[in-house]
Length: 146
Image (cartoon, rainbow, N blue to C red):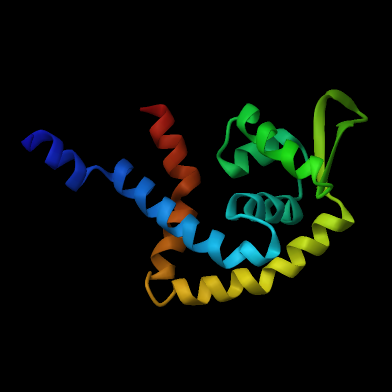
């Protein structure tokens, strides 16, 4: 029992997962009016901000396995928010982009996200969260190497 308590009290993996779920629920509630959840909103923002439109590059930026990303993208594609097509120069690669409908929906969700972000800033030190985000690529490399 003591070991289990120590895990619950000290494990960064569990703590970060719980924090991520709480923050995701918070954003999901604030984005509800847009018809998007945070995962969809985040993927669409990653797609819109991308300079490399391939699914592989998107998976890397999102920190997802390509199979997981593909499952998430299928729903957005079914809803007409994104398009996925083979890259003409390499038929093994696929490119993804927002449709006009997706771009409009993302744009309409932005004020909801901004308000949620502002409110979250009252509870979290957003600079600390930004530093964690900036550290992610290096952290991923160090954790995979170990």
